[in-house]
Image 1: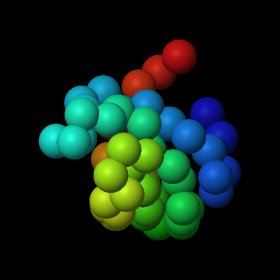
Image 2: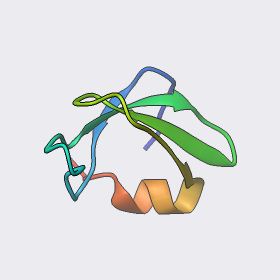
Image 3: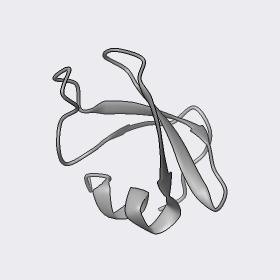
Amino acid sequence: MEYKIGDIVELKKPHPCGSRLWEITRIGVDFKLKCKGCGHIITLERQEAIKRIKKG
């Protein structure tokens, strides 16, 4: 699947704040994701991010 900046994705496990929704803010060798619940920002390697994103 192709992802682009600004996409909202759902991860398999919820963030400690309770939200599963994340906004993609950077794409490259790694993905930068911003939690839609609390605004926390994380950086994941591309393969790890793709593995954690819930399908469908």
